[in-house]
Length: 97
Length: 327
Image (cartoon, rainbow over the protein chains, first blue to last red):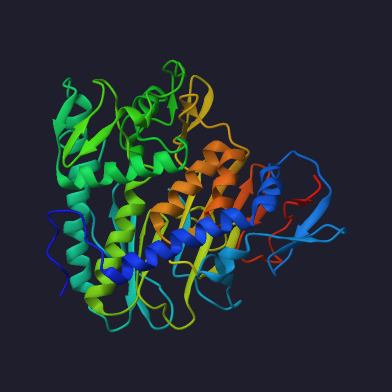
């Protein structure tokens, strides 16, 4: 049975609260770990020219002189997206509204 | 807010329904055999409660009463207080790039009614511009809202996403299985993913045809949201307008990005980051990178940039070149 319409904000279970805290800490970890990459991302606005470098699927960005991690924390905490099989039918569309 | 639910093709093993709601489209998808009908009845009441609280275009809504109240303080419903509290939280987290005090700026730009009934070519004056009043002038204590009289609030950047999160959670828990709720293309899921995962199409418009430019991915994060200047556009005094106001200037954002999609732990976070990035340009990019979320950004010329753990597709050409570390 679905719950009655609430008369106040939803209360989260202890497990959900713990997951939420873990997510926040993972985000903070990403902030620390990607300090160098963040500077690069900040320059990624269209119209700017820079040394050509292409981010690859492993989550690193190579530029000839080595590679830097690109947001490594986000790949391990259930974030992001994965490739869809070519025959897969989209359930819904995410777009502007 | 009226409409009848109609079936949608959700693919093998899933059933779904769609209807007009909150000035956009509501969609819900659950496993085949689950009690979809009872979920839809509950969602009808849930959406109606939200509409009565936060629909700026409804004269009898709670937020309309707040916006027109000349007093500095007003008691509001718990629903509006909760939506406003979340909006203020994300205003702080985005350094003001997502600000609920843009209401008057939206009206000045010509967005003063239901978009479906709005005149798309307007002859009114251009908006005067100037920073919006600022989210920090608004406080919520319990259900009491305090703000300077005349400050007009709009929760368009956060409310639908928050409601999607809450509805997906409630339906999933009641059905003891996966559930997906989309409100205007802001997508929240809850529970274990169905076999094959939640397959989602990304496009400029959540109502775009399947053949429209975009990308198809499997959602790994629990939620995804997209902000775009390609929809809800109109012209005023010969100038193109859209609904995403830059709080720093008080006029529609002049963004290098046309569409920004973000996958994150909650739909509310995803939507706030997507809007902040579209409005804030470089400042928004730093927010995404700092959050650990993943994003797909489409520049005005159609080039695509992927950030974080967003899957790259070979068919997304031409990709936006990533600048080197030395740049």
